[in-house]
Length: 401
Ligand code: AMP
Image (cartoon, rainbow, N blue to C red; front, side):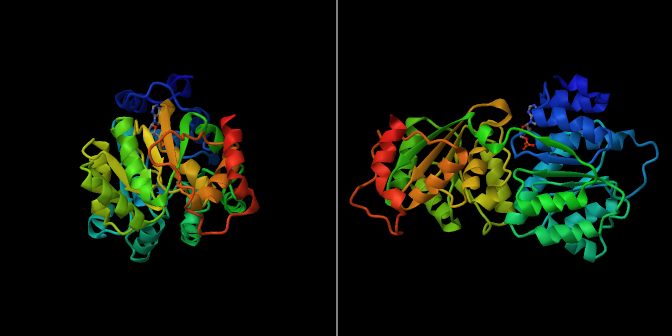
């Protein structure tokens, strides 16, 4: 299947060629015809599948084809984080550069003045995070009465991050008559209920459930000790000659500590997390994308949706307590058909997290035990291990068998 089969207009095709896109990804191939036909859509797809283009491309086309466009915001894209919002706006800029579609963006944590100025100039597409959007609606800077299309992006994350009530408030302000596109990586009950309440006879498009995406990524696991993790990280960065790596820690302090330990060893690293200013986060992200930084250390919320092409390595420096997070994290690599490597560290207290992850992905992560910082058997777990944990040795042997 090529983009030519999707009946895209010349200005869009030209932009896709300029981006170097040749074939649509599965979600694009399946979603674009429905959106162009005016249908509501429920898309189950995670970041990395090309879902942004799956909605941005047909939206640009529909806007471009309007004969007598009315003034005012016609499309609202609601997304949970500033980083995602920026990436989505960049996508509208890239795919829409020959189609004369205007766009702007609002998100919190920065001065609203440049945003309100841009809003006054007017835009067809508004990309927004929920809090700042509601704030600017309250202040009278944004009116959504001309809205024709609404995109809810990463709905499950909205729930995880506590934004779901804000999302509901926004939805109440939208005109009833509209086209709605709903995207979520997972569909827990509450999200399915929300989808059913706002979509009308939606086309449903689901691409590779997260667990099969994971199969493309080469995964490995290192049992080690909490205090040895910085050394193990450095060892692996050197041993595998890794140029760019995204490292996930559980806490903001943990992220700062990793950066400090890498700095001491003269590896350029920066942390992005909620305590950093928006400017600092964006700078770190740009430096990383441009290759000025080797290692980006992130917490889950800050890293959500980080879109870095050709990211080869993701480290689970700490194993997440929520097993789905593991899938989200390693999905930062192996994008757009490229291969990727995901390396996880597991200290003794994280073994129950590991079991939950392996249950979710339906397989054991291959263990590498030839390394200089193996688990020290004299270190006992702090939390009580469930019964299964005591058989760890035999479990390991089974994996390697
Ligand atoms: P997304 O899932 O929207 O975050 O997109 C993941 C990455 O895939 C982004 O870096 C896009 O630039 C890239 N991408 C999206 N669609 C295509 C395509 N059809 N061909 C090549 N790369 C793509």
